[in-house]
Length: 117
Image (cartoon, rainbow, N blue to C red; front, side, top):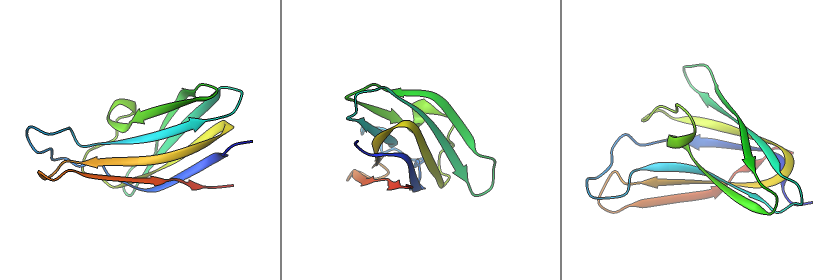
């Protein structure tokens, strides 16, 4: 068995500013499913001052990866700190990445999410 079924990402933030002529600032939740069965995922986003947003019906096929960009996945607001809980019906590994292009020198942050189990 590879991975866990619940992962937390406590520090997420989609910058409002993108330096012209550069990549767009964005975030991604990257899922690796090294197992033999498809993984069905739900991502719940938590905020300081608003109700959670739940995105279900997501898939990471068996022995595949899925790179889910937050600006394409949900109505996550820009410039607001938030967190996420990733739940899967199969064990997976979850990584979080943020590309910050708020200045000419791009910044890339990436970390393995916290396994709940």
